[in-house]
Length: 472
Image (cartoon, rainbow, N blue to C red):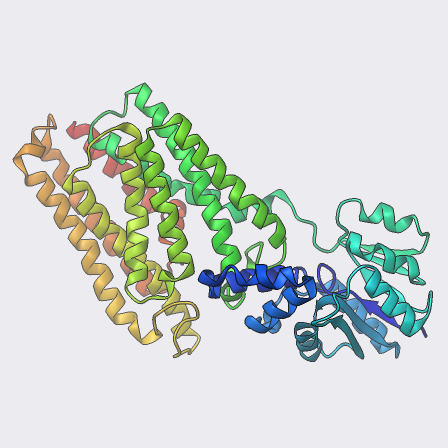
């Protein structure tokens, strides 16, 4: 019985180990970005070895294709020899083979040879003979190998691959187990998170200019550009967080972590979105808005690379990212920011950031874990302190609102300033409810997503806005 040879990247694995190790290296050693360029100057084989040795990829959580694994298990049950042949470095290939325990032998790249395209074909033909094996692959690089194989199995083919493979007349089966769809991109772009950008309109609301059509147009444009920038950040964050996400009970289902979208596609999409956002900001809005957008991006990048793993710093950074949306709105409208807006936003968003951390730690404690949460600076035993800090911060935002109402200069801005006092019990109710639900383990790990989907939160938000409208 002729052996069955399995390709790794894009076939058995719904990812590419060269890109996986490259992204992991940039996350772990951002200041050593020049080293992969030095390795690449010596050849692709040197690059793969350098990245394989410098990074620690957990092969147990990689997105393997169950359809390919099913084929392997079926053929092994018949006593057939199964070979893993990959252009990835042998360090990673050997670890994967050891983890899966499905292969009789491994062919892989080393420090001298990049085992891809014709080199892979020559190695297999030299070992098994022309037409002496069946081959399972997915890409244009596999075309020469299929040509030398007895039977060709095509898995989730790249564009144009199936046509070229069939030209050799030996295609036995085409497997489509991982078709990407528009829902995957919508999920990766996190369009629902664009609701956070509604904070851009807060300065317009505070200045009682919501009916100013010219400013509203400015605001909608700022909303769109900020959303494109935020989506770019989400894509980059998902790429940098692949390892952590794959260990998370829900984040492991994100499109990049699950292999539904390719790392290559993400590496193309995030800079395009970012460039569009900044070009639009520079050409269509005040330069101050572009400056705030740049600050937001830099802080988000710092958060993704480092700050999110620092206790206390992470939640303060999250609160600042929310507040920057309000600052961006003021810049887009050319309106001044007040002490009251900044103080209120910092306290309430710090509370929501702590809600997010509490929800994550509560889930970890419920599973009996006691070690530090992966990718974070907290232990499950920190729950009580986090809830104390978070609830206190939320109530401080209510106090800031009360002081704002009491300030005589602010009351002169409203026709009926006494009506604004109704906003205080509304906010008190909402903050108390959020923390009670969080304490009970009923909070989504993102409180903004919770608020968007929660009927009571939407009603409270509408009443809160109505109070200020009546007062004005």
